[in-house]
Figure 1 (tube, rainbow, N blue to C red):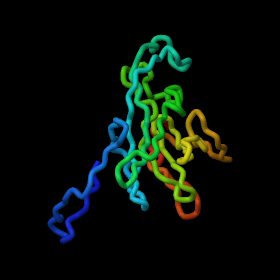
Figure 2: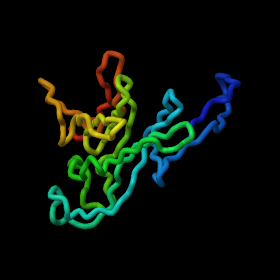
Figure 3: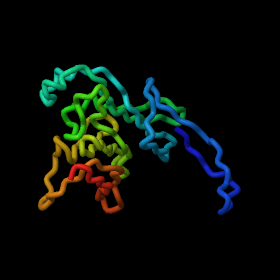
Figure 4: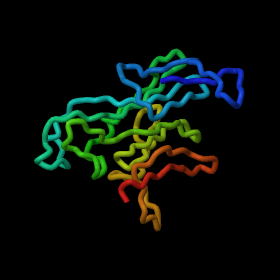
Length: 193
């Protein structure tokens, strides 16, 4: 992944030339995903990756018998790299989620299964934990960024919240972020409505 800056000589037209100022890649043999990248005030960076692994779908009760085969699932990985580009924290969805958490539009009988589809991971400015969005689970998850433990799960099959009068659940969301008053905003794609 690249962080690109405009050339210091800025003119409105034509666009100033761009140059590569730095590059980042995930550690631990993970391949970076393009969905999100954050440069933190302490010089660390947050990167996302997908980690493929063989998976025996026979072990899942949520998979119909006709789909029970071996497949490759893609687990979501969130990494924090320090200023020297060393991994200082890594979280992997395989330790917290199941392919059964996927929404009904995810084909669990496919050979390649993106059951969670992470698209955002951002440090919650209020307390330093991670807020992550998993599109194919219709879920936003808050992760203790010191221990990797799940603090809460919002939406999807494992929702931990009740909102009075909320009959319209979010679906295939992107970009959850805490705002100044403590609320969390997100883009609701609404695919499954």
